[in-house]
Image 1: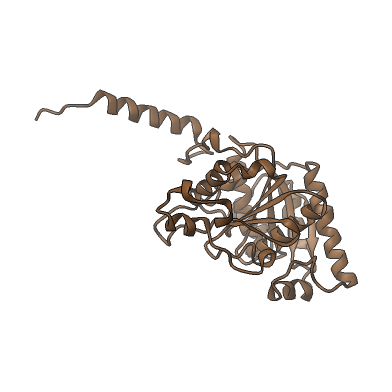
Image 2 (image 1 turned 90 degrees about the horizontal axis):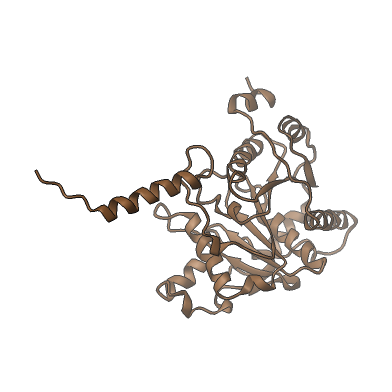
Length: 309
């Protein structure tokens, strides 16, 4: 049998394999390196991660408002198929980037910023990237298309702070894509095993991305936690620190039901304390905060640390 090999095809495939080897994000990763033309320049970028349902969107939205109260121009990008990250900022579920792209046959040149970006409370600009069709796509593609639109419309040039609010635990390179853009990654957790287990996985993902990108761990945010003993045991072992703590207050629960940020709720002493904690966190992150190089734990060691046999 006579087999003819196309030399150009071989050369192309060889270059691709070599590129993947040079650009791998961590041992065994096949994630392709960020296109340099898609880098976010100028703005400070924060990515918020944590276990599903832990309060990332509430944390992200109130942190966004805190930055805006400090006079910063803020853009929040929700990266979740539920597209409810900016719900309390805009008082509605806004269209996702993928939705509006689909309507124009993915011809991005036909879109205007107002087609996918909505101004929320205190001037915070809001975008919902959305998610890929279930079982058929990758969250990394969605994030990439969103950043591409922002670059095409020069929207990042008028932005001081970008906050990515990212779906659940990091279990694949797709939803770790915002880490390719971020300066700091913040982890929202609670004082329980499942939340801390998810945090440990996220620490692993950030460590892998930090090998090739500027992203660094920015600390831990304890949410809905009266105590932090379990979190403290984990952070002490791994080299992390608590950056902020928000107790399990009813006013926080009610704020979401009222489609409001905590900065719009009826004043009270306990609410003022929470607002001041968000403002303190925003001021700390704006000045750079402390980058951490945490060492994640093995699953068995984590079980042992938190009292499981």
